[in-house]
Length: 256
Length: 284
Image (cartoon, rainbow over all chains, first blue to last red; front, side, top):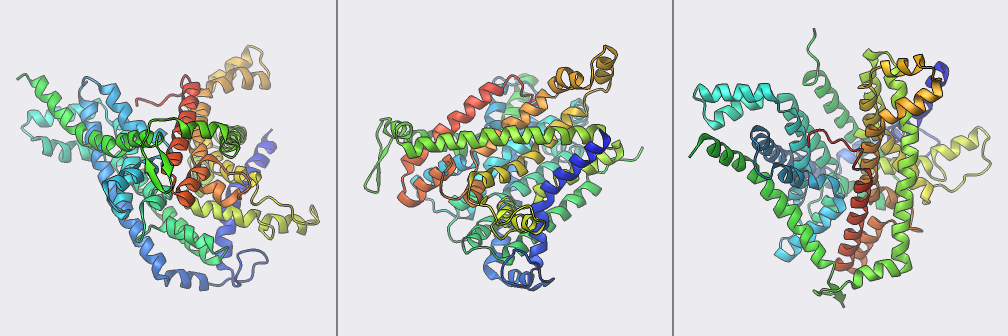
């Protein structure tokens, strides 16, 4: 049974890591196709993508949309969670359901709805419209994470602060936010990741300025190339770096 | 005004911005889409009407009806395979891996999550292609004489999807498994159950919430995804999202795209209704 377990874990990890290994390995390919035989290593595709203006502009756009839309989503989600966690309001359940609803709807449908609405209103597709769409998909996430992490001890601290004369804004930013720091950071970075990697909303709601996934998509149409491997590996590397940074700073368990 | 009413007002004030945003950019567009699905196209202009022509067409025209069937088949197959592959992995990590390494093992098991979604499908295209690593490898060790066609078939779509959802399900099932006390298995053993019966009658039913949460997520994400079938599946059989994009792109037929989206939503709602009794979405 023990041996079988390790064989199974080995097999499934091979399956899980196969595409990633192939992606990264052939980003160092020396010839023009990212398929065997491997000849290299060569860094020429990295030089190429880092000097590609369209790609670097798309990367900047993506970063901008991700950082800003996640911040808006975090604020909206934080306020909503604060409002709903602290007192029982008439219609609480309905409001919670409404805030969570976009989570259960395919991004394609959200994008299509927004596209028709913006068309009717005469708004042109742009990074702004994409940002609006990304806030829509990230509010439920931020709300759910923050709502779940709000508890009694924090409610008591808020009450104490108010009794001692703190204003609403002071309570929010000097008491609530610091107490929820891990949850706030988790919600923010998850939102950034979702927005950063989101394709279909950005595809339908941008036109001239595009985001990175859309730019990569158009690279795919011109066939297989190690350049796509290179940009894909770079993005992966950045995500992993952020992940480890978070793991070892924010989410590190205090030692007993 | 009592303190409580002031408090309630303030609380409403906090919730309002998020609610307004959700209504303006989610509910309203969705309502507009339902309305649009009742319109039709004359030439290239949209004529608003109130007929079910688009829906009738979806359920009568073979190419569209096939889209629903293909989407459902792929989604069901992917969900089942992913659960079957993920459960043992989650179980091994939860019971065989020493506790201090479990977090590391889970992080490793979902590491490829952090590649971009588009890039991950592209990477599978590299692996599965005629000249790709898999075929060349199998030929190299003598299992195959010539490459077989996997790319641009349903199999490639399924493999791409399963890869993604095995990671997702491993997470949901693992978090369910570690909450179970080992006493359940011990009690079952004391009462004379063998390993198989303990698994079948005790452990498996206790992990149903984790399985169903993950399976529902898989269903929703899989049936609505455009990227994976578009990159890996080829053009022989189109899924619903591909059909929706086709309506938008080639013909600019927004009403038909909207009607297809509404049908897609309806399928997700049915799936939710079927799995609702097992879904445990914490406090929300």
